[in-house]
Image (cartoon, rainbow, N blue to C red; front, side):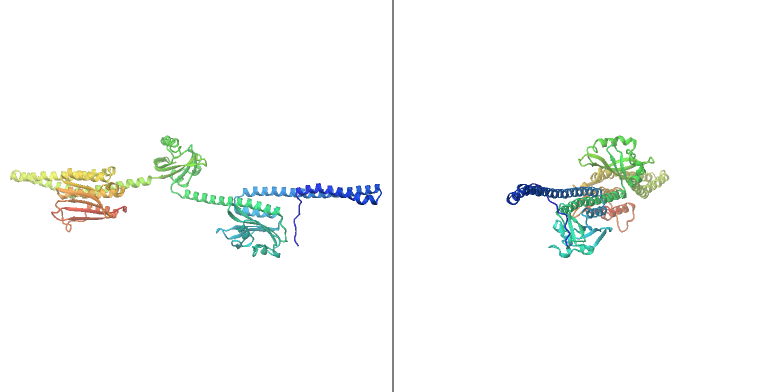
Length: 585
């Protein structure tokens, strides 16, 4: 047996009945009086009978009309209750942003609203196709999840509704399912016979299906289909919002973890410089805790730099520009000033107006200390090299010169010509020592490379060699030599060239020399040569400090260094560097 829902008469139909039925009744009574009653009864009797019939008819008609009006009133009240309930449900689901709580509430409200025995909600899985019953509740039971009942596209009631995008009503599953259905697993599992389901969708996105069901066969009225569809539409929007909220929360949590794990101080301030956020690295670098810093105005800016910060806020930052890698100083809670590099970006609202600033700061104290240590190490290396070379060369020559002059005093009266010759030799030795010392001074002065660049530094080497050693020097540099090397490679290359030129000045006794730097077949080649006395590489010491420095710098450059020489035929130092290589430390 099928249980039907209360039928109602529409207002236009009721209006027609209220007009036509009385008119038809009066006309019928008058015809009966004229055709049947007057011929059969005396005049008073016929008219009295007719009046009685009409009174009875009016009473019956009034009762019918009142019954219909009462039914209509009940229907209107029921619809108003449904609208209020639907509005209340909409307010409740809109206030929830957690999907599981939202679904549990909707399933309960759907069962209550349609006075059904059971209700459930099926959701589309992560793959966008498979569905599972996320929440199902029957009267007097707690909600359950049927994740084991997985439905492919078009399968079961939920799959059919999602695929069709339209609601579906099943009056009696035991008597047969509508066309397009092969089975209804959820009804079979719960012992249900009738169901009404509506799709959950927002635009083109289909999220699942909302279902109510009864244990007895049920004829679902159009109003119920409309009601469930309206509820499903509200739920779909709320679920989409809950999903967006969950994603936003996840993104916010990831962003928060990223900020907290950063080694840089990341802060936000309002337009007046008031601290809005302060990460863990800011606590470590500046010393103030988050609780101490938030709400204060730039506590880490030294008083003497506040005017500079205010000018930046009024100037480029106020115009929405980004301040990148700005070197400045900040002050810690303990009063110690630290060097930092900071990048500041504007934070804009939806209208594009700057409402706050994001600052990322890095303490460069360790970096500067490392640079200072490298500078001092390089200075110590140069001092050690100069000390060793002076000891091995100039100081030994001066010591020998002292002995020679002492010997002159012994032969000055006995052999004046010999004394005169030895004094000439001493004079020449003094001049040689002067040239040697000037060579070292020249090597120290060559450090101006840092300010001049590679080409200017090499040109300076050649000019010093010409002046100090009275050597005719050829210089041959490629046009793009100044742009071919980064700062670190250029520095290493220059130091190798300086050592090679210094050796020409100190040891070669040459009249002509040359320095060339040119690219060839994927390599750069540096040549320093002279036509001086040369030496025998097989007998000459190979552990000299200068040559050792050259080889170490070559290793860091990833290049190859060769020194070619023969007695009386001069010397050539050749350095081969791969194009585009980086220094290796």
